[in-house]
Length: 222
Image: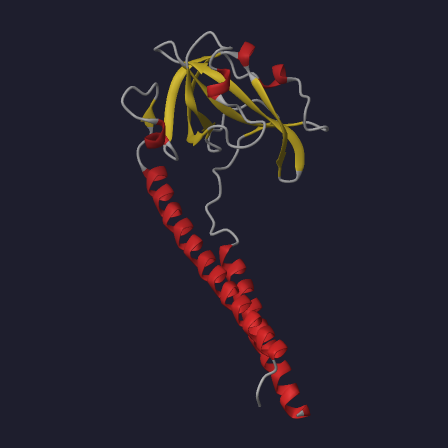
């Protein structure tokens, strides 16, 4: 059967859309492979021996996703509260406290989650951990999300230099104030890329099958 101009244009458009869907599906698979490769790097970095802070020869990118340990004095006067956090479904805040290091600089330490009904206000004095501290935790880039501490922005408002990283205290550290919960390490998963790829391939199949069905009906009518 010879296709009419309108039918031919519709068929070409449907096949072009199907090809686009297939391309998007393979793009999602490529992103999945990239994420898996990045996760493998993070696993290796987390398994390395902890880095001692302050850092003198390591760039922030070299510290990312590594464990670090530091000893110093907490500066509670310049503590920051990251509001709008949740832990196992409960609302609260994160407490980020500068730890003054031996060279005069400081690093912000994410000491954990404190419950707060409005996820904004909390009596931070209840969660003090003493002045001198030795912490071990995971080095993360900063800011991690909206509302998080950004050392670059705070550089001029603090009386000391601040390292451009966040140290998230290990959840294995047992000693902590009552009510303060340590964060687990960020989960390493494959994200939604595989499911997105399957969806795009399904859309492509629907476009092709649907077009074929329409053409078949028209052939039967003819």
